[in-house]
Length: 260
Length: 351
Image (cartoon, rainbow over all chains, first blue to last red; front, side):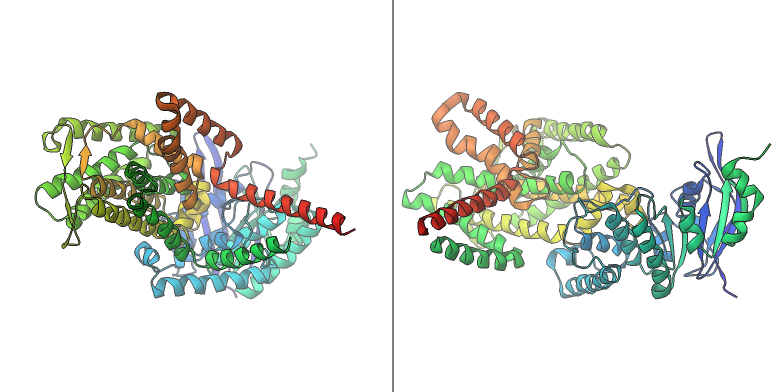
């Protein structure tokens, strides 16, 4: 039995009078691929922002049990979340356009640098070795994703599919226990979506991570996820295997409207 | 045609070697600039020309700091002049107290750095145009302090000859020693170029860029906005203040009224005209905005030279909106076109 990694316990989030997330509870177990689905405006990204501590004033609790057992994420600063092994991508690709692909990966390794600015200015042996080691690590990830050859090109001007890949590569630099993907397949063509599917499987296997993702491409979600959480208007609808979610009355209603 | 190829191969080899050794490139660049310091002795250029180059060197260091702020961190400061003044006047005040040059320089750098950190804290609360206005008044306050507060004295602070490293007495008045001062500030510029290069190619440079391009992604990657805003402002202030120290060292007589908003705005223009994020571009920007008007235009056009330098700057911005440093790519393109033309000509001749 795999142990729970991420636990949302009665999480609510308000924006003014609007309840974006309403008493939401679910658990993601270690080694799972879990999809979070819901119609537009259901509060999916808000959930992600609460988990990664961009929003601090949520109600309820969010626990993460990678580095230490059942750590309350609220005690982590937004910049410390990555140290716990929890890392995310963004709905609209958020990369540094005027840095090379390789350097963007090194941004993802930011929290692993031990040396400070003074040793960087002096280019001490330790600083050079550290930079080199992390570069090697980036090379390996770039090779794994098949974008090693273009590593020195700027991110600016790369096709959307490649940018999505770079963002995933960047998350891998931080030795993640759990990767949160915000619409990884959005804007990809069919071939790229298929490729992404295999890629996510391989990442899970090779890097031994758990994956939580938001996606609108239902074919993709149904194929890839072990379990799916469906929400609507911030409220929990169901959490089950893809097949059962498809048959769930409430989920069908949320997407298609009721017969009445 | 053969000669062209040979020359090309020769330079391609050199440029490959140099691009792998950026520090060596900065050093060679410094050597070229340093040679200007000896030309007045041969009578090839006037002493005044060397003085203009000294200012170019000093402004380059100041502008590099602002480039870290503007180009890399996406932050703005209109208080640059105030910090250059702090470096130059502060050095004067401390040295007149009898403190040796090196210690006085470190003292003003520490004081300015703390002030910069304060503005950095400030920048967490205000952004964009509001930050510009806030820093504008920081500069204004500093300017008022320099002209009103007694310890900075009336029109100028005289430093007099500087005992460098404790044993070399260097005075502006002696021609040989002035060349030596020029050499020293060139050396300082090279050091600052290396420092800047090492910063922007390190974790810090990448973090500054990540922070300015996407705050959310930066935070998710563990980059603290507080830490890197402070870093950006402290670095920019230290570069500006160090420029001021170089000014004090070279001029040995520091006016109290020169540190106005004009200067801050000119430094911004230097960075933008030369090229954001480029070290050589920054130097180029200083050369265009300060060097060209003072080296040539003034001689030919006298009082109306500023009209021409204004037009020149506008033209540069229209044709090179990302910085004049991109002329390099255009030159390469032109060269390739010329080569293609020549080889075609040769083919027709052979026939």
